Length: 381
Image 1 (cartoon, rainbow, N blue to C red):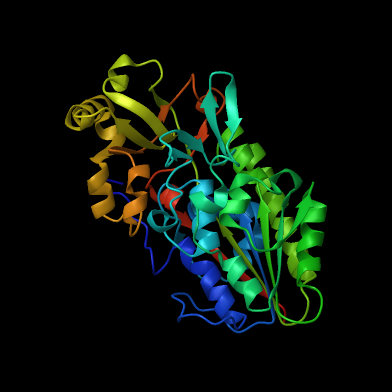
Image 2 (spheres, rainbow, N blue to C red):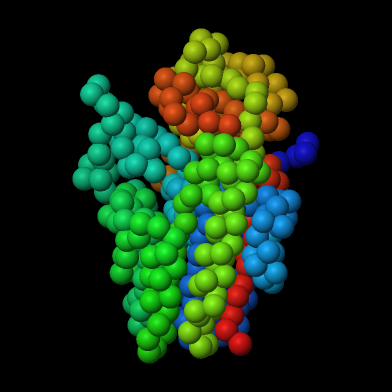
């Protein structure tokens, strides 16, 4: 595609999903951009890496998912990566308003913050930043789960055990009773339990392994397809056990592409010229430049990457709405230059990001494959 797929913030993006579910549960708020029928209890299952294009292409591997009504596709926002998408989902805000603008970005103390691990790099390796950069301050907007709990809804968050108390959970999904899981069985069981009982209930569930196998093996590979079949069975099991007057909503946080044209920013001295910090991920880079070097860095990155990326000044990306409305105090987190990969290209960092840089599956940019996710709905009869 010759033009980027810009996120449809305020209309059909991930940020509109939870406000619509809260409205369906009777939580006060403005009229939602998306509409769900009123319901007593609702579960939202986020399948990491479940893109619309991939699901359509491999519908035979997921017959139950393919049979569900799809209120999507939705755009996920930019960058199209997990920590950004989960925070938009959890807050109902675009990245420019909640401030999680990259897998890594320049935080308010001037250091790069890894938002998946909530760490920054020191002389002796990664440093836990949860005390120095509290997630509740880095992402200070109230979450939809907090809104629901304040309105008397019983709220549960079901995710991997190791994510309990993580920086990303605290930033994006605070406000619910956390239930840690270890496998598909207890993930399904805890979601069902979160919907069972009297009164209004909201359960958020998270499944990580489709994305993991997409990174490791590539999207659409046999391993990925077999995992998609497991996800299909998971959703079918939850739907079979839905309590009366309950609904299950399934979506993704991004799609994925296989990359084979690599530009390594850690070994190419040309891409390092004038660069102070390099954030983001392989398909979406924040380039923070040294004073006075913006025009030179912009020209260099455009020359090196050519048609393999949309490379624009940060101010242009902001003006064109890549991040939605950007709060003035958060503008410094966005790169002076922003690069969004095209086609099968990736800008890796083999030294700073050695593991992810070697993997064939990547996401983060503005392609249709990465941006569009489904919005599937299952209800009890």
